Length: 299
Image 1: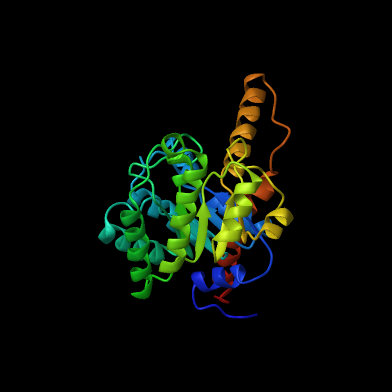
Image 2 (image 1 turned 120 degrees about the vertical axis):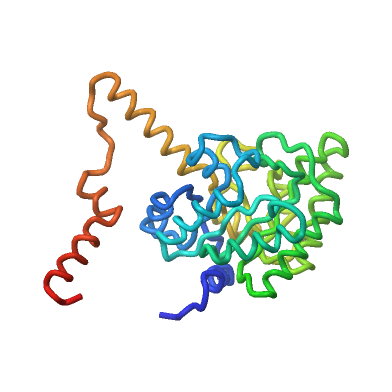
């Protein structure tokens, strides 16, 4: 098996392939481990999902970088597949962006997503109103690229929300034009993966892939603005990553609601992991094997 020198190298090797990688997004160590066990080669720590699962809060910049890093360390420590972290706006000015880069790299992430919203940011499918100026947006990516050159070995995912933020004031076509201008500029600065948030149609997605160079990511949010397309169609368009940001969180919440309804009605929920499966999933079997090895003197 080929040896990778860093999580970022592992992620770059995946991106260098020809297929569109399906990337379920996690929110804690257990969900990340389930992604890995299901055979997916990578995952993404969704900011929306972490805010919801960790604090029952909306994805509006309420969680601090410290909270995100704490969650990220648990996630990265639980799996061997590469994890991309949600870096939001970089948490401040250029110096903050660089520090965030180094912190995410030390936490074990393979990549980081940085966006051009005005802080505090919000989920891109819930009414984004403002993005920063071109100069500030480029400055964030320039700072991230400089930090990468200084040792923060991360794949940089550069995102723009200009398509949504500028539509009301500039019109749909002009907003898309600005979004694509920014993404091309991000690519020229050295961003690895380009992410147009919330395109409204397949035509917009095709234009993105035709005009913006580099590796491109699509966001498949159930109930969001972007058309939900199968991975093979996304690959044919030119996408290399297909993120599913809320699928696991939404399914988990629905399953818990169903289980609670069963309990409230005096029933034992039918759909659940057997205790033995759950015990093995969280590592009891491995723990006991280590203790046995210690007792036998083989450890």
